[in-house]
Length: 136
Image 1: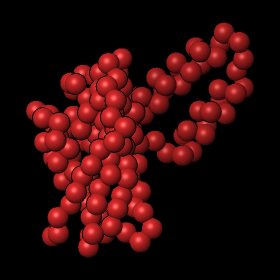
Image 2: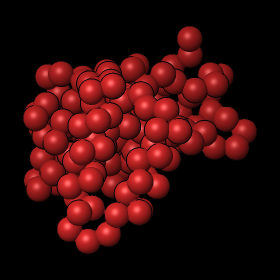
Image 3: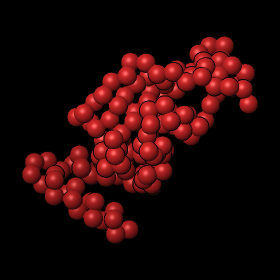
Image 4: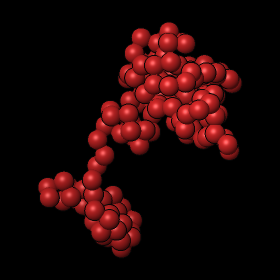
């Protein structure tokens, strides 16, 4: 394995979302790309993070010709803020949540049923549909 150089830029502290955010540049000549788990440890070490699970890396693009990749990084202050502010699909990828499996047909039926009901009854119908789906 050849050496990997990790640099960050546009570093910002975001106290409202309890995180630090930045762009990550990775130089990896001779390698196709670098696993996110490996990068989490490297970035966590750079910014003295206790738990590397608080580092979230995403949206990586490899430059044409290879050897350089660029993506986004977030370092949350604690696990509660990560669970609160991080989108569900990224929490699923990180292993904090499990993906809710529903069939395509069931989702379409629920959508079309909701379209038929108007006014105040819509919220009641949605609640009943959710309970019916939960019982199955």
